[in-house]
Length: 84
Image (cartoon, rainbow, N blue to C red; front, top):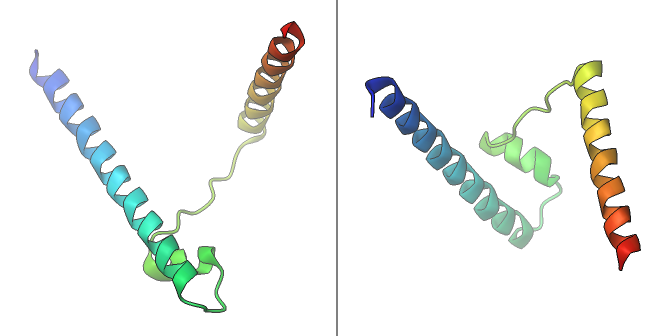
């Protein structure tokens, strides 16, 4: 294994662990949010904790690609259902 590949893999592992940790924190936060009756929405609660991710603005091209992908998946589901 060359050095660049080792560094790449280590970064991927690090990013995955960080994302897993963040997801676990969000899950735990949801459980606490449900247990405590407060007037904040879950999104507001996550913002307060610093766990909320900002919504990414999609370009028109990205949105169109996402729509096309969704429609292609829907067509596959419909075809599979019709075969039954």
